[in-house]
Image (cartoon, rainbow, N blue to C red; front, side, top):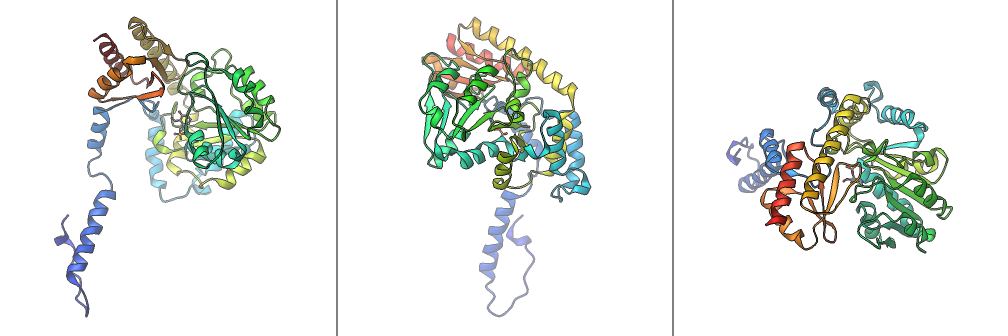
Length: 381
Ligand SMILES: Cc1ncc(COP(=O)(O)O)c(C=O)c1O
């Protein structure tokens, strides 16, 4: 559209036609930028050109059942999630509560688990935040931006998960917030549930333990792993952060939730940004009950893990992985060469979550194999 298509205004005394046209042109340029994409397929093609293995997204996308429900729900986009539309967030909260054996008042829907983590940092981090390194950075970075004191326990060897060392660190019993990612990102591995319980018991009585369970669906059934919702049920000062972004393939819907004792849940609710989007809520409700899709995701990830491990072993590259949909690879001095080769192929990964290591999400079987082949060629060559 050009400024010429703007309807001619009725001239009035003092009307500056040139200024009007310039203003209109500016408005049109902005609306062209902000308007809906003219050709969504171009965006989708772009997505295909670039292989996104950097954000642990689900390559299968949302389940077909979820997509279909969300397509219908788009008609509710003018609603805030009204009770009469039966999609109000409280209903999803109740659904989650009954699955988890907690009260609906102990579930707080938020805009992705990112909002759980940042709100927790703001609410409870002022007395100091302790965690392991490497770890998922959102809560820690946000707490740092708020000026909270941060303390990290670094691994003595490799990228081991040293929960006992975190417990023994002098800063931990003094911290007002301890953050733990389980299953862990970026290492992909799980902390033993008994060690997490022991860590929580060692904290100051007023401290809050935030357990980030963004990948818990992948870990269910793994030896030694248990969700820390059990500590919430036991009334401990624990906030479990969950998300629909990863396993359920709904990252773009920005929907996550906290499970916490009622008083901590109340604090989160009082500080959060408001109800999440109605389309995402509809999708999430269907996603929770789609067992067929869940089985497919688990099977695909398990196959990808085996295939990727085999490839990296053949290249004699150490990997760190657990039940999650990603792995870390130790490349040492070859990190730069591998990064360059992946960039050349438009494959995005998290290039250095820890010195000398890169983290890669599993895509479809073909995508994972393609990335593994690029890594192998780069280290061989
Ligand atoms: C461990 C962990 N926690 C939280 C998040 C944030 O996810 P979201 O805000 O999409 O729920 C991520 C995303 O990568 C993650 O890996």
